[in-house]
Image: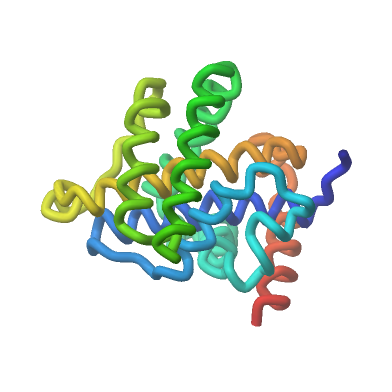
Length: 209
């Protein structure tokens, strides 16, 4: 199935939104609930009928799209190397994960269970859902290398609910990295197609406003 460049950039925004939220939880102990819902719900859409089923419209990815502008725009003082490290690490982990069919199946089963929990509690951001997905991350992705080293306030990171949120968001970032690669995303392409990336990002943001 052919994917458009628009879909590629949408998935790329999904990665950046996930890591931006990880940073917010690690530093401040909280992040926007609606933004987190977008990321978590993308984990539950394992057999989507269309790309829109995964993320909804562009409005839900405003945080990720704005982060792309900060990271790839001309204002070098806006770039955040911490976020860049997270994204690079998640891309490495995505490649490792795709070579582990048994782990992929375990994650799929775990996400189906978490989706049932979300339906039961009426919210994908219920603490039990975060706990379930966080534990799933710990028993799967955490066994792979490289490890994601999350920086932040120790008081927030040592909180079990926040730790579960961070792990859930990292898994959502890997999910978006899978989609990005399936849509033709390549790291070299980010270097040579920066103007095209920024143009498509701005177009999506215009739709969101």
